[in-house]
Length: 444
Image (tube, rainbow, N blue to C red; front, side, top):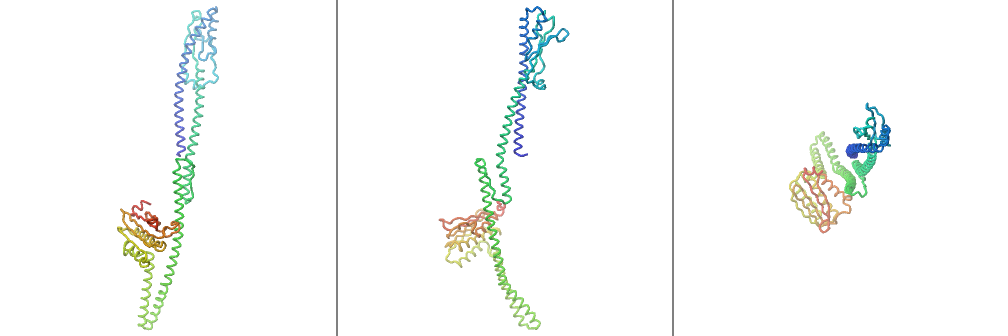
């Protein structure tokens, strides 16, 4: 069941219970009031009979006196006067006032209860002619109570209707942002990061609106970065493939042709039994194969640095620093490595971060000093590479493929990557934290 329907059902149930409780209390009050009124009417009726007897004392005809007494109750709202003979047959009967808005019979039966009767005290001369009985009639009293109940029910109905309409309006207004949020989340799920929510100045929803829109903006920025990175990576891969193809074509293909040619000559010399020439051609084949092996090792080292496997992370970084020292002796390098052995994946990422950071500092930053620190903090490996060069690029997330590549490598294993200004707002610092594999999985 939806929240809206659940709330409506709950409110209707509360209103219904309130209505039933009110109806019960109203019934009890009306029944008590009718009973009291009927008893009071009987008492008043006896006095009316006594006054009528006194007023008609001068009347010589007893029948006319009785008729006058009965007629005194014509139009009464609560009492009916009935004159009966000794056999119980009705001789005379007064007329009760008819209510303008009679109550339903069911209501009349529930509220009025049993009729009350009382025999009037008549003088002996009149008592010999018959018995005067006063009988209560609750029609008018119940009709009056029924009119009040109908008015109360009408007021309650209008009140309940207004309350329900107000609750529905307020609820739908409150749920509208949730529906819009669900729709916006669906758009985000399909990759439409332009989705935004605007709910005005609603205080309770301001933080949700701000957080969602900020999340959508970050996702849009990340998607743009990913597209840029993918395009550049693809371009670099194409360039790398082209370069490898040219290297293989220029360096390997000629020697393969030479091997093929020497093998053909060996066959010819073997047929001619020229063994001295065969030996020379075989030596040429060995020379060609050795050259191709060296070149293939060079190509493979470009694809995967064997130095990590041979020297470990510290030795690989020292070799990398020595490489740049030999080519840029004017730059001062400071290396501090105090890290415990890492798993293969974190070792490769750490090496790539240092390698790319050094390349940026030397080739692009015009730095005169580069500090490399690799250390262990708890279970994490922390890398800091700082230089005193030209500083951060204007838009590192968009213009630097190397920085994007480092960020992607670090975040792919659940680590944290950031770049900032160097000491004294000079140069740039690359900071990376590589978490253990277990924590990396939980972080993702």
